[in-house]
Image (cartoon, rainbow, N blue to C red; front, side, top):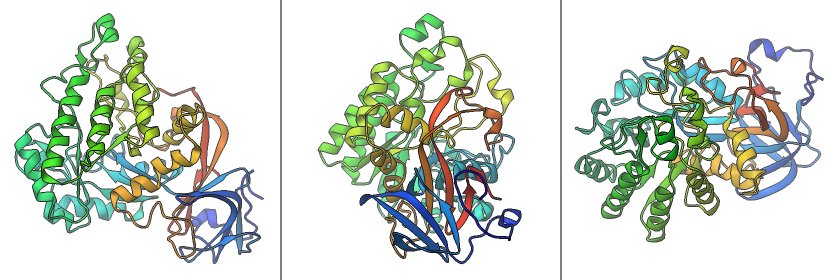
Amino acid sequence: KMGSRYVWPSSTCYLDRGLQLPESVVIRGGLVVDINGERKADVRVEAGKVAEVGTKLRGDREIDASGCVVSPGLVDMHVHLREPGMEEAETIETGSRAAALGGFTAVIAMPNTEPPQDDPIIISAVKARAQTALCDVYPAGAITKQREGLELAPMGEMHSLGVRIFTDDGACVASAGVMRSALQYARSLPGAIVAQHAEDETLATGHMHEGEWSSRLGIPGRPAEAEEIIVARDCILAAQTGTPVHFLHLSTAGSVAIVRAAKAQGVPVTAEAAPHHFTFTDESCATFDPLFKVNPPLRTKDDVAAVKAGLADGTIDVIASDHAPHPTETKERTFEEASPGMLGLETALALGISELVDAGVMTLTELLALMSWSPARLSGLADHGATIEKGVTANLCVIDPNLEWVLDPANLASRAQNTPMGGRKLKGKNRHTILRGEVVVLDGQATR
C-alpha cells in the first residue's frame, strides 16, 4: 500500500516512468456519478477504455476509491495557458499539470497569447505542444485578427483543425457589425460556437466594480451596465442569425436575467460563471489586494446571489475557472496598475463544493454536471464527460468531497501563484485522474 487512498500491489515502480496504465486497473469502492445518476460500483479500465462497471471486479491493479466519487473527468471551457509568448506566467505543461491535479481531463485554451491564436499556424503549434500535456488541451480560435475586433480571423481554416470555440477573450468584440458577421460565418461551421467577453470597453475603464466600495476606496469602477449592454446586444444577434453565442464569465444579476429571458424565448445562448464570481464580492477589494482584481470585476452580494441562482436553475450552463496566471511582478503593484486575473484550476472544484454544495444551492451531482458533462457537450468533446459505461474512453477523476485542506500557493502546479486563497481552508479535492487510460494523478500527485 502506497499512501492512504490507493492500493497498487506490484514490484514494478510505475512512478519512475510516468505510471502508464497496466493491463487493467480497477477503481474500487467508489460512488459512480454521471449524467445517468449515481450508483455504488467498481470501474475497470483496460486499454484506454472503461471495460466494465459492476461489483467485485478484478484487475491487475487496484485504486481504492472508498469514500470518494468516481466521475467523468472535469472539463474547463475557459483557461489561459499563456503559451506561446508568456511562458513566464504559465506553459501548456504546467497549466495542464494544474488541470489534471484539479480533476480536469480537458481544457479549452483561450487565444489571448502572444502571438494570438488567430490563424492555423498558431493553432497547429499549440496542438503540437499539447501532445505531451497531462490533460487534453483544445485551443480556442480568435474571432478577429490580432483580437483587434476589426477583421474576421480565418475561422474556417481553424475550424478544419478542430477548433470549435471562437472568442477574442480578454477583449470584447465591440462592433455589432463585426459580431454579426462572425455569427453569420460561424453558421457554416458545424459545431462552432462564438463566445463573447461581454464588456463595453467605453464603459469598463476602471479597475473594480463601480459601486459603493469603489467610491469608498477611490478606485475607478467598471459598471455592471458595461457587461449587460453587450449581453443584451448579442442575445439579439444570436436570435437574428440563429448562431449559438456563449457568454464568458457572467458576473451581474442583470446579465443573468437577460440570458434567462433569452433562453425562455428559444434564443441559442449559453453562459458560464467563474468560481470567484460566486465566492467573492467587491468588498474583498477593501484591502487593496491586487489578487482580488479580475475582469469582469468581483460584484456585489446581490450579483453573487444571482449567479448562484442562475447556476441552480440552468440559466448558466457551465462553471469555468477563467484560470489566469500572472508573474508575481505584475501582481505586486498598486491595485490600479496590477494585471487582472487569478488562478483557478486547482481550486475550482473545492469552491464549487464549499460555496454551492455545502451551502445547499445544489447537489454534488448537479455541480459535476456543470463542471463535466455540460461543458463537454457544449464544447463538442465526445470523449469527455461521457456516461461511465463499457466502451467509453477512460477519462475519469476520483474526488473526495469531504477532504478538508488548506491552500498553499507555493504548492500549486502553476508557474504563477496569484490566488487570494492562500491559507484558506477548502473542502473537497481531486485524488486521482485518469486520462485516456493513463493514471496521470495518483493520490493527489502528478505521476509525470
